[in-house]
Image (tube, rainbow, N blue to C red; front, top):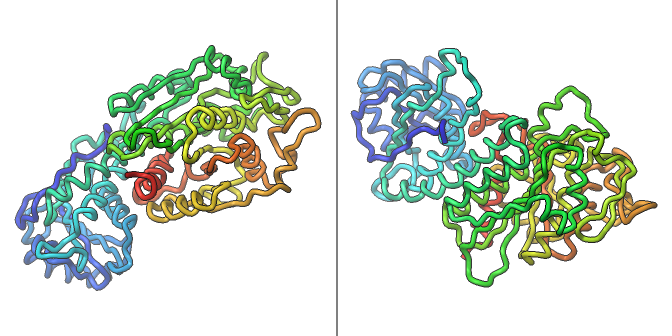
Length: 505
């Protein structure tokens, strides 16, 4: 990726020259053995400066010293981590992000992968996995989407010259661990790129074309055009896109890394490349954000890239429905009735409830064609989920307790959190129609995210299934230590962890 720093691993070498040296300390400003060796006599200066600045090593705090005496570095950055015993894997990833946030745009930095008591064995320091987690956090934080800027202020110049050396006691182990984490990070950044692209650049046909790049990683990619979609009978999906001059597409991506004959795991993404709301048009304010209404599809593409790049021992299929929802003389109307691929008919109440129409056909197609172990779909589906869960959690709806529990645990491990929401026959009745098998909204604001999920459930039969409503997390999410972009790439790390922990081998 263009903004990614050049990261290398090297042995701990006191006296190594650097523009910036980064070390970590716990509460009480205590350092690990490797960090203390790197600091040498400068450790006394740090202690004095910490006392003067009232720096105690509290989590998230930093202490900076310019041209510190006794070091071959122009700048020293000390980052507090709080209690080392409380650190989880995701916290170490965030430490990497915090470190990258303190580096200058043109910098040659050394980051010491060390904490008091963090490592085991004679080498001390962080273990290889922790050093690799640190590096992954740095890659994620370094991302910026600025390819369309032609004029920049001095402090906005591209960060292509940043070079980071991570000093660690086990160089080979860290390199090996980072290879897998870098593949996952690249998947996240690919998803961010797709969401950040303007809609005049990334429309359905172009989105589909870009997925062909996954072939380099070993994925098989098939693009279904309009003729194929009509032949399949995807009337719900095609109805959404019929008001646009841009043709709709469905993309099928396959990674075959598991045992021959095993049922694949399946991931489905909503890819509305721009959503005006159609005839039920949205208010003008904030409509520009609807370029991100394909964040679910972007996540699936990023995930497939990550699984293939790290050679995951699993068979996985990713399917995305790509449309543009526009008002036009040919656009679908409230009151129309469309026939889905499943044969079920749908009364259109509101053309702005379009994502579920796209997903209904794609879920059915995936279920029928691939007979997967489970299906997980991601979609920026409802504003109602933001009202319920804000930007911190994605809504989780599922017909399977085991799958839900595994998603929740994977979310806790990666920091991409989900919260299970209810499904019930009472809510399902709200989408019954007088004129068709169902209608595409519940008819009121009450339980809006739930009735949307109930709609999707009618297209999965008994296949284990989970729906992740990522309207609050996929775009315009709260920025944090590892993401300063409008697009988050949310879901790639969560679902990769789900596969790695429960479905590989």
